[in-house]
Each structure stands twice: as C-alpha cells, then as structure tokens.
Length: 515
Image 1 (cartoon, one colour):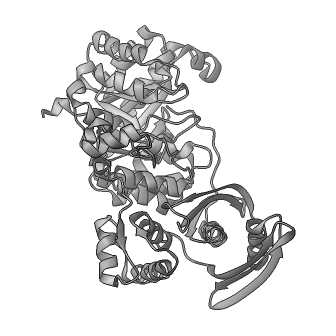
Image 2 (cartoon, one colour):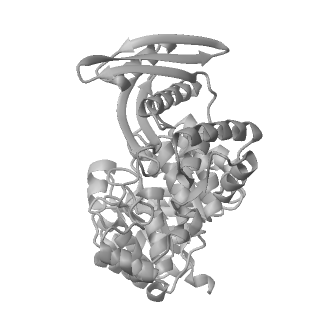
C-alpha cells in the first residue's frame, strides 16, 4: 500500500488513559506498558504530562530513554514552562514530539479561559513558535474543537500550521459529536483550511455518548490520518476511543476504508490484559475484540455454523488479535524445559529465578487442577513477575468459617528472613484475612474495590483477585491468583502493601484540562 493509505496510531493510555479515576500506574508499570505498545507497533506513545508533577516528568523521561521505535510525546499547555518541561523530559528520546493544546470553543473561552478569540489565536501561535525552538515535531490541539465556531477553528488551524505544527488534532473533548457530524467537520476542515495539506489531521474522541470509535472511523473515512486512542478504551469519564476497535475495524474492513495501520494485531490481547492487570480495570466479557466472550458462541445455530465454516459467524479470528485459546497444554508430568518453551510461545520470557518460582507454582497447581490452560500459565507468570520489591511475602493461612460462626483467619507472612503470625476475625474470611495482615505489617489499609474472576473454566479454575486499596495515603492496584480465593485475596493485598511501601513520591493531584 502507498504511504498515504496508512493511518498513524497515537496511543494515549499512559496519559489520558491514566487520568481515569483509579487508573494510576507507577513508573515501572508505565514502562512495561510502553514496551508492550512499542512491540505492538504503535506509531506515537503519549507518555504523560511532564509539567504536572515530578512523577509524571520522571515517567516520561524513563519511557523516552528506553523506547526506540515509537515517537514519544509529552503533553503541554500553551505555556512556556510546560513546553520546557516536555523538552527536558524528552531530551533522550530517539523521536520526540510535543503536543500543545488550547481551548477554542465559546463556552471554554468565556467560562474557563476568560479570553477573546484573538487572544487565544495569538497564544496558540506563540506557543507553537516557541515549541519549534526545541522540537521538530509539534502537534496542536484546539481543545473542544467539535463545539467550536467553525470559522474560528479554520483560522486557528491555518495559523498554527504556518507557525510550525506538523499535526493538528481535532478533539471531541466531551464526547458530544455524532459520527456523521464529526466526519463532516473533518471534511470541512480539509476544504476550508488552505494549508491543511502541510499537516496530518488527527482525531481524539471521548466516549460519553458511546460513539468515540464511530466518530474516529467517520473522521478517518473523511481524511484524518492519525487516530488517538487507548488500550481497552480507558480514560476520563466514559473513556476514549478504543485502540483495538479502531485498528481491527480498519483491518477487517479494508475493502471499505482502503487503509492500513502498522499495528501487529497479534499483540492486542496481551497488551489489553497487561493494562487491565496494572490498572485494575477489568475488561467486560462482551467487550469487542478483547472481551472473554468476543469469540465464544452459545447459540446452537452459531456453533454449527462456526464448526462448518468459521467465517459464517466470525469476521476475524481469535489468532488475529492474539486471543489465547483454552486448549490443554501441559500436565503434572511436564518438565521445566517444556514449561519454559510453552511460556515463550505465549510471548513470556522470565529470568532463571522467576522461571524457577513460576515452575514451582505450576507443579503445585497440577496437583490441584486436572487441566492446565494457557491462561493458567499466564496468570502464574504474571504473579511471579514483580515490578516492586517483595518487602512482605505470603507464607500460609488457615481459615475457619461457616454460616453460623464468625470467620477467623490465621495468616503467616515473612519479611527480612523473619516469620510473623497473627489471627483475626471479621465479617467474612477476606475481611478477617486483611485485618490479620494489617496487624502484622502495622499499617491499616482501606479496601476501595474488590473483584474476582476465574482465570479459566471449571470448578478447579484459578481465581484472580484484583483490588484497589489505600495504604500510606496512596491508592494502589494489585492482584493475586490461586485456586483458593482467600489465598488469592491475601496475595493481592500483600502485593498492594509492597507497592505502597515501595513508592517514594506522593502523587500530586492536579485538575487537568486536556483534549
């Protein structure tokens, strides 16, 4: 295909996605996501908003130092200190971009910025000219573009392109537009901005009315050639346009769009699971492309059709997006080498120490489960890969509970070579378990969210517990897996404790007005 037929994928999971309440990730977690995005082939990774806090600055700098193939982007308001912070955080990037933004809608000008259109125009041009001193790649966003007066929008786009912007993003900041309307906006911009051919038109859509992907695709059909999106569609309020849905729509309906992306779609499900695990945002089973039910057929007529010819009810294959099947892969007699090879085939490579611990977990699991699935192996591997120091380690627990007795849990933990035990009772075994852990670590946690789902099918399936907990004035997300849900709950809580104790910088809370 010709270069003009390509749609650039701009991923903002680490910036806009992380602005979703409760989705905060630490520096190592952001880097892990960035590596996964790079492997997937994402063109631009918006790594954060560098000026907003020392933590965000450090995260952008770390991503910029380590990612080699994708363009690394930092967000900035039309303010010199923001642009300088972005430049300083991105100085080690192989390819760097600054993304400057300024509101252009009448409601934002009157109530938020309290400035007239001419003042806004001058601020935007001055910011792009200043950014050009430190960047060769500049993107400009007229925030709330979809509710802006069109003539003013045309004018500001023309002027920022003259000033040096190579990409102009047209955000539907509050998810107000409808697909036909938004597609027409892009077509009108192409028609009415004389120098629009000197810049790439980008689109950034929010999902407040459930049409973020529809709006993005309509804009692409009208000539936009960059889509801004997030993994699993996470983001502020109702979220952003979903990367996996945009990419697979372009790929599956290449006959309609006549376009392509550079995304390695087989990495989609793996990246989706990673983001879900790190943020604690569980992917709904009916989520398009990456939901557990996306390729499952319950109705008899559907099952019959798929067995005869998959294309009768499947417009893409699970393999297209790296969807893990549920075939039996290993058993209790499998050796360490077979275990390692199977993990590698799933895209998982562990250090020797991690592999030893994971294999030990696998052998114990084979005594409890008759069937070991790929999902089980992934859960074990993820559980053993720690991005934080294990200050506390789980050793054992015993529970006493029943319908007519108060649950009691005895917990055994280890730290710095010493073993600690404590017993507690509670409203339920999980509550009792967490109270016992609190007594041992001498820290009281506040459980904000708790969820559990099975890793695979069957009565002997592993349970995966994800929690959001506040400890030491920090809110962290953690998970744990086991065939025993109380053990899984304890592991998740201890993981949260280790995360909270490993973090040094307290996050700075800032109200962001962003595209």
